[in-house]
Amino acid sequence: MRRLLPIVFCVLPFTTAYAQEEGVKLSKEELQALLPNTEVMHVSKAGSVRRWKNEPDGAFVASTTNAKYGSVLGTQGGSARGTWRINDEGKYCVQIDWKREAEDWCAWLVKAADGSYYLNRVDPARKIELTK
Image (cartoon, rainbow, N blue to C red; front, side, top):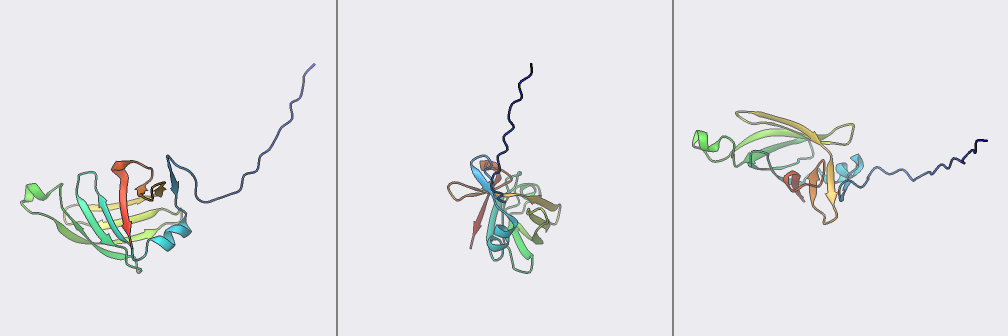
């Protein structure tokens, strides 16, 4: 004879933020409150330190230490115009028209327990500094 086991459903409250490797993914609404007029500092995969300010109209001028091309060209740093936005998924999107190579990406912003911000997951290589 077969025994039927009861099925138990658990309903959890819905939230837009969730734990993600020691951090919380920010919601679209949180990004809309945080990002305008915020100064950003980020180190690219190539080691370039880049800075910009997220203007309320979605524009900015970025500066870079130009670690990728600086030594080849004999120059230190540079600047370029760019834009930022929050897409429909709630990701922070950045587009920069660098002289040699365009940059265009979107990422989740994750806030770690210590208040630091990261792109997609808590990982020192993905840290992004945001200050008002």
